[in-house]
Image (tube, rainbow, N blue to C red; front, side):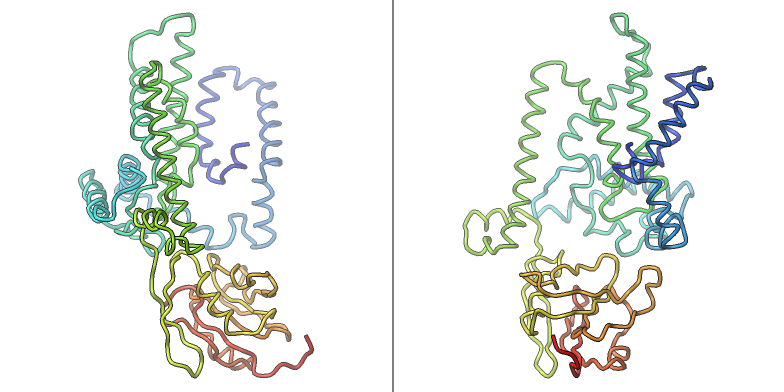
Length: 407
């Protein structure tokens, strides 16, 4: 059923098999046990959605693994150095995850991550590093591991668990060997999930532990090995509260950017200064007018640029949209969600534009759409209307030259 939580869980199948063998031993090969495992596995495939996902991919895309852009998550470099480099990157970001660093220290933080990876023997750059899949300075930031609690309790807990698992000291009570086995199995999944995801998956700028939640979930019980006395529990509670405040500050800075509170409220101003800078200036231009500048407070969405575009057109209206998988299209619906958005791209043939219906009044091409759309738009009786000069968010928009229908 864990497969329904994240689609990377099937990568852990070898760990599940090892755990089954360690717990059941010879019983694993008896027919009642085999039939029970097959039955439970079949029910899990159906209920978790895994089977339906692969089946729909096969029917829709002709490939059970899905379209090409979904297959990019699997690495193409499986040599020792590339795998070791991904492991080193993941370990460094896990150990260095302080959740937040001051603006003045962010470059030093990024440099420290890079130097530590090289010190561990990792390569400076992988052959498959590109755009989103990179370890550049801007991506070497906190929030790629397990935070302060991970540094103070999860990692030491794993070390203590490893010592108890491999050590010769026997535990008190009648549960000696079963206790050792339990700790060893938890360690197996903790270390194994970390190693497998970094060995098999393509490195991403957001890190790889976000794609493998099993690491923190299964590893969490190991923190209990350090919480047997009251003072470590108090320290853990303090770290949790501190982490909560840090995450709340980050969330409030997003609220301030979204609703303008940062410009009016002293508290929001202070909170925004603590957070990462997300303001950027874009140049946009309406057809026949001089270029103008727009200060965008959220460089991670196309909200403000889409709103600027909608200010200059009549709506409700019908918009044909072409972009990539990550195109932020929802803002084109308008504040009252009155606009109708018609996709011009079929994911099965992303290089071919679909014919726009007759009632489409505007065409919008996101910056994620790589081809030049001008010739295609002019051929379909649309003329240039709006463009963003910077390669971000909405790239260019066209308006239909003549409307032949009654709305």
